[in-house]
Every structure is written in structure tokens, then in C-alpha cells.
Image (cartoon, rainbow, N blue to C red):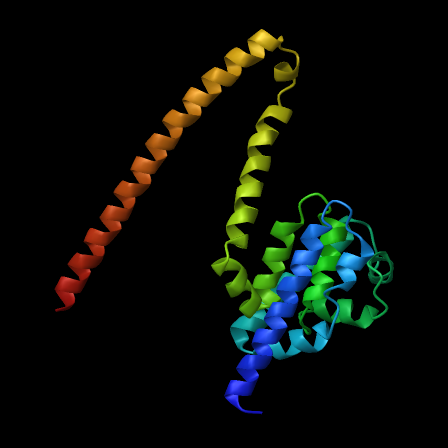
Length: 217
């Protein structure tokens, strides 16, 4: 197969994966079996072909496999029990993935996301796509899916600030509105302060880079 044919095949596989992700997110709240099955075509072979067995990639696969094993153990599951929970007959695949010896197919990433991160699957998906489907990860970054996940995670973090304070839930409506107004003003001030700080750091980095370049010349 020529390089051009390989590229066309990669493009078709990437589009198939994106369609699978779209179906998954469309059925996000229900996480229907049909949404999961939509992305199930040839994913194991695709994952194996997409991974270049470089030392760096093998190291990333090892770390990802360990993190997946930790997730399973925290959930108190054996490999067989996890495979049954995500409707996967090939338990050897999960074992090999946890040992860093096999690539995790995209379709299985979706199944695991539906199991481990039912209410917020995107961060889970993006984390493991970076390791096991680099080409798809690049595509997701280009269309902004990664930013969507980051935004969702930030919103969750802000919500936790409220949820972790019992006193906020005991306020009267009037009192809560006062806290909300003050929080809005404080948040706006913090945004301006940090943005200015980051701009200053960026300018300092640019000046340092110019000085280094001039010194080389």
C-alpha cells in the first residue's frame, strides 16, 4: 500500500471515529448501547495500526495502562468483571492494555468512558485518545473538542466551590444574591489581574527568546 493510500485509509478511520464520538455524545445522557455500537467497526485493528512502537509511545502506553488498572482496582473490579460491565468478550485485550502491551481501541475508550465517567465522559475520552489515537487527538484539538472538555471541567470546579460550603445553601434568597454579586465582582477582578500577569510573563518570555537569539548571532 502506498503512502497516499495509507493517508486515505487513515482519513476514513478518523472520520469513522469522529462519527462514533458524535453518536456517543448525542446519546450522552442515556448512553444507549446503539451509540456505543456505532463506533465499533474495526477499532482494534485501527488502534494497533495507529500506534508507532517508539520508546516514547510505549512509555505513554505503560502509564495509561497503569492508570486504567488503578481505576479498575479502585472500583473493586476484576478484569473479567470490568469486561462484563462494558460488554467486552476479550478480557485478554484489557489485560494487555493495562500491562502497556496493547493499544486501546477507540470504541473501547467510549465504553470505558460510559462506565467510569458517566456524567462527564469527555475528559476521560480525551485523556486516553492522546495516548492511543494520536491522529484523532489532533483532529479533536483542531475542531475544538479539547477546549470544550476543559471548559466543562472548569465549570465543574466552580460548582464544587458552592457545593463544598454548607453555609451557602442555608442563606436566604436575598443573602445568596448579595454573595453572588460580590463573587461576580471578585471573579472579574481576579480575571483582570491574572490575565495581566500572564501577558507580562508572555512578554518576558519573548524578550528572553530575542536576547538568546541575538546572543547566538
